[in-house]
Length: 139
Ligand SMILES: [Zn+2]
Image 1 (cartoon, rainbow, N blue to C red):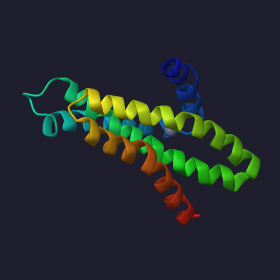
Image 2 (cartoon, rainbow, N blue to C red; image 1 turned 90 degrees about the vertical axis):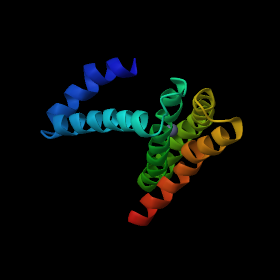
Image 3 (cartoon, rainbow, N blue to C red; image 1 turned 90 degrees about the horizontal axis):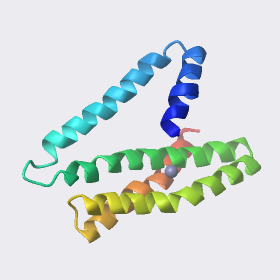
Protein backbone atom coordinates (compact mmCIF):
# COMPACT_ATOMS: atom_id res chain seq x y z
CA UNK A 1 0.00 0.00 0.00
CA UNK A 2 2.83 2.42 0.85
CA UNK A 3 4.61 1.71 -2.41
CA UNK A 4 1.48 2.06 -4.51
CA UNK A 5 0.55 5.30 -2.69
CA UNK A 6 4.02 6.60 -3.48
CA UNK A 7 3.85 5.73 -7.16
CA UNK A 8 0.22 6.69 -7.73
CA UNK A 9 -0.01 9.88 -5.69
CA UNK A 10 3.08 11.21 -3.91
CA UNK A 11 5.65 10.95 -6.70
CA UNK A 12 3.44 12.55 -9.41
CA UNK A 13 2.46 15.28 -6.96
CA UNK A 14 6.10 15.98 -6.09
CA UNK A 15 6.93 16.25 -9.81
CA UNK A 16 4.20 18.89 -10.18
CA UNK A 17 5.38 20.83 -7.11
CA UNK A 18 9.11 20.91 -7.78
CA UNK A 19 11.03 20.56 -11.03
CA UNK A 20 14.02 19.08 -9.22
CA UNK A 21 11.93 16.28 -7.65
CA UNK A 22 12.96 13.62 -10.23
CA UNK A 23 16.62 14.36 -9.46
CA UNK A 24 16.03 13.95 -5.72
CA UNK A 25 14.04 10.76 -6.33
CA UNK A 26 16.85 9.30 -8.44
CA UNK A 27 19.52 10.42 -5.93
CA UNK A 28 17.60 8.83 -3.06
CA UNK A 29 17.15 5.58 -4.95
CA UNK A 30 20.82 5.46 -5.94
CA UNK A 31 21.98 6.29 -2.38
CA UNK A 32 19.93 3.42 -0.94
CA UNK A 33 21.00 1.05 -3.73
CA UNK A 34 24.69 1.90 -3.36
CA UNK A 35 24.64 1.68 0.45
CA UNK A 36 23.03 -1.74 0.08
CA UNK A 37 25.73 -2.84 -2.36
CA UNK A 38 28.59 -1.42 -0.23
CA UNK A 39 27.30 -3.09 2.92
CA UNK A 40 27.03 -6.36 1.05
CA UNK A 41 30.57 -6.02 -0.27
CA UNK A 42 32.44 -4.75 2.78
CA UNK A 43 30.45 -5.66 5.89
CA UNK A 44 28.94 -9.02 5.10
CA UNK A 45 31.44 -11.83 4.71
CA UNK A 46 30.82 -14.21 1.88
CA UNK A 47 30.96 -17.26 4.14
CA UNK A 48 28.19 -15.87 6.37
CA UNK A 49 24.59 -16.77 5.79
CA UNK A 50 22.67 -14.54 3.38
CA UNK A 51 20.77 -13.19 6.37
CA UNK A 52 23.72 -10.89 7.12
CA UNK A 53 22.61 -8.37 4.51
CA UNK A 54 19.00 -8.65 5.61
CA UNK A 55 20.00 -8.00 9.20
CA UNK A 56 22.40 -5.12 8.76
CA UNK A 57 21.05 -3.12 5.84
CA UNK A 58 17.67 -2.09 7.29
CA UNK A 59 19.19 -0.83 10.56
CA UNK A 60 20.83 2.37 9.23
CA UNK A 61 17.55 3.09 7.46
CA UNK A 62 15.63 2.71 10.71
CA UNK A 63 18.22 4.90 12.43
CA UNK A 64 17.83 7.63 9.80
CA UNK A 65 14.05 7.30 9.99
CA UNK A 66 14.16 7.72 13.79
CA UNK A 67 16.46 10.73 13.43
CA UNK A 68 13.84 12.34 11.17
CA UNK A 69 11.18 11.37 13.76
CA UNK A 70 13.09 13.49 16.25
CA UNK A 71 13.13 16.43 13.84
CA UNK A 72 9.36 16.04 13.36
CA UNK A 73 8.83 16.28 17.15
CA UNK A 74 10.53 19.66 17.34
CA UNK A 75 8.98 21.01 14.12
CA UNK A 76 5.41 20.07 15.05
CA UNK A 77 5.72 21.43 18.58
CA UNK A 78 7.10 24.59 17.02
CA UNK A 79 3.88 24.93 14.96
CA UNK A 80 1.58 24.57 17.98
CA UNK A 81 1.20 22.53 21.14
CA UNK A 82 -1.85 20.71 19.70
CA UNK A 83 -0.06 19.83 16.46
CA UNK A 84 2.95 18.63 18.42
CA UNK A 85 0.83 16.59 20.81
CA UNK A 86 -1.10 14.92 17.95
CA UNK A 87 2.11 14.16 16.07
CA UNK A 88 3.73 12.89 19.27
CA UNK A 89 0.87 10.44 19.90
CA UNK A 90 1.35 8.93 16.46
CA UNK A 91 5.09 8.90 16.80
CA UNK A 92 5.08 7.30 20.25
CA UNK A 93 2.69 4.58 19.06
CA UNK A 94 5.09 3.48 16.34
CA UNK A 95 8.39 3.90 18.20
CA UNK A 96 8.05 0.67 20.22
CA UNK A 97 7.25 -1.56 17.21
CA UNK A 98 10.10 0.13 15.37
CA UNK A 99 12.51 -0.92 18.12
CA UNK A 100 11.19 -4.48 18.09
CA UNK A 101 11.54 -4.69 14.30
CA UNK A 102 15.11 -3.40 14.53
CA UNK A 103 15.98 -5.96 17.18
CA UNK A 104 14.39 -8.89 15.35
CA UNK A 105 15.97 -7.95 12.03
CA UNK A 106 19.41 -7.72 13.62
CA UNK A 107 19.03 -10.89 15.64
CA UNK A 108 17.81 -12.85 12.62
CA UNK A 109 20.91 -11.59 10.84
CA UNK A 110 24.27 -12.44 12.30
CA UNK A 111 24.36 -10.57 15.61
CA UNK A 112 24.01 -12.20 19.00
CA UNK A 113 21.08 -11.12 21.19
CA UNK A 114 22.95 -8.55 23.34
CA UNK A 115 24.64 -6.87 20.38
CA UNK A 116 21.32 -6.80 18.49
CA UNK A 117 19.67 -5.14 21.49
CA UNK A 118 22.42 -2.51 21.69
CA UNK A 119 22.30 -1.70 17.96
CA UNK A 120 18.50 -1.65 17.92
CA UNK A 121 18.52 0.74 20.88
CA UNK A 122 20.89 3.11 19.10
CA UNK A 123 19.01 2.89 15.78
CA UNK A 124 15.44 3.10 17.02
CA UNK A 125 15.58 4.84 20.39
CA UNK A 126 18.70 6.96 20.74
CA UNK A 127 18.52 8.54 17.29
CA UNK A 128 15.09 10.13 17.92
CA UNK A 129 16.19 12.48 20.72
CA UNK A 130 19.34 13.14 18.70
CA UNK A 131 17.19 14.36 15.81
CA UNK A 132 15.22 16.56 18.17
CA UNK A 133 18.39 18.05 19.67
CA UNK A 134 19.90 18.70 16.24
CA UNK A 135 16.76 20.42 14.95
CA UNK A 136 16.25 22.47 18.12
CA UNK A 137 19.83 23.65 17.87
CA UNK A 138 19.19 24.76 14.25
CA UNK A 139 16.00 26.74 15.06
ZN1 LIG B 1 9.58 6.28 13.39
